[in-house]
Image (cartoon, rainbow, N blue to C red):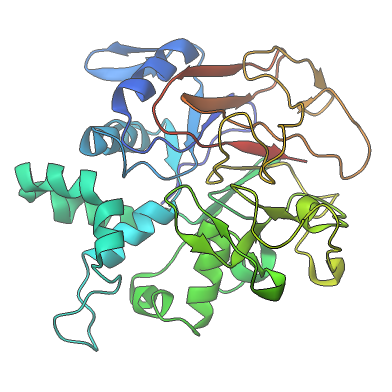
Length: 348
């Protein structure tokens, strides 16, 4: 069961944390949360929505899960599933059809990605099953009064594959194996929702991701309404080899653009090198994270009011990100130090 918040309750959306518990607590302190009677509380009754990716990379993964889970269980937060929570469940789940194998291959690359969590579980082995069982309960997407939230991409066709329970979509217990099998509808749905749709690069082109792995597919900027070039349509963490994305046309006939008349959607997941936009050129101007902004009627940020206009809140390197959706101005964007770059974005 996902907590349902009243339409007049202020919300703060918090992006990928990746095991940075101290950063999370500092961010909550800036947002006005204080500990009273052994629980974190907010004087104005604010609620929190975590967009997923609580774990991996940082030094305090289990503590991060404990903080967020406590807020969820006391009725003050929603936590969505990120691709790292999904991957963790598969990594630790034996494949029922392949003895001695797991649903996510325990390869050197996957072990390295999950290494920080594995080290903590070596010290606290009794916490593993409880943590994984909780991850399985997390919603894949949530729709509230006038807003939506998903970890990577709001994609209606993929959501149609999963059952909706109240305000949220879940991956049922009996369909996790299918979600790990390439070619199954559940696999394609989770790939889109938790990792983002991708586009194959032409002529064998590739780029290197942040870990130095060659990538021949690039994630699609689904929040852009009418991209015309590969640069406008795709995310390149670094400049691709063998092609110039600024000049190559993009076939937008199958572009999964977010509908212009849909509610605003909050998401995280995407990573950009500091000071650079996803195509590797100097970063475009975006709203400052600490800049106060007024609101148009209906609780949306001031700015470009054209139908389909979008506001993207990038989280630069070394900071955690939150953005508020409430019913009284001004909107606040708060940043605190963090070692893992990432982003939380708002599209409307």
